[in-house]
Image (cartoon, rainbow, N blue to C red; front, side):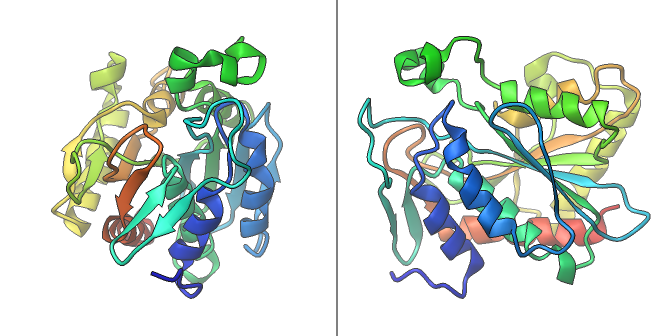
Length: 287
């Protein structure tokens, strides 16, 4: 299948998936993301530590900003001499390559590029380093400085602390990633209860707001699989609610991926488009 330049997700995925932005080398993705978002009216970049990217996009006044989160890092399955351009393929139904988390990043960027023409709240783009723990566990020698001082979720933690320090708190955070839960079948999952993994008891405000967003998304797309798994939505849920004052919901919407954490990951185009449409509809109604 020829990549359709008129389809924003096709073009974005093709450009993002080939970048060898492995864990601790996320800066390789920065110029690509900045170039893609350059045309977005009013976008302001925030400089934060190390390999993370944060941007603010204005939206309808009177509505709290929504954080759209995706991680920049990929797993290095190629060893000490990886290709400068990673393999990527697209056919009539799937894309194949290093798609965790090129898919989430493409969806977030595609949504952001629609902000000026849709009734969205302000957006905070939260693009994090070191979401993956695979490299630290299996081949730390392939990371910068042997992975010294790094840990999974360090990027989401740094971003959360920056948002708190600068009083840029989002009304909610929606992480976009890929899920292994469908084991080769098509589907989109919604993760909505980080406390089942983090063990942190949510405050009343956080829980009520989380349930409201969950129900909004299920109204939009009743076929979403409700579940939970590990990724950055856990870290945002914990870090942004440490004192239980803010009550900031942290959820994740995730197209199916299979195989998972391997060299040739595959994602259904229909699932990518579905998550994209769900996010657009939700952003138009939330606030």
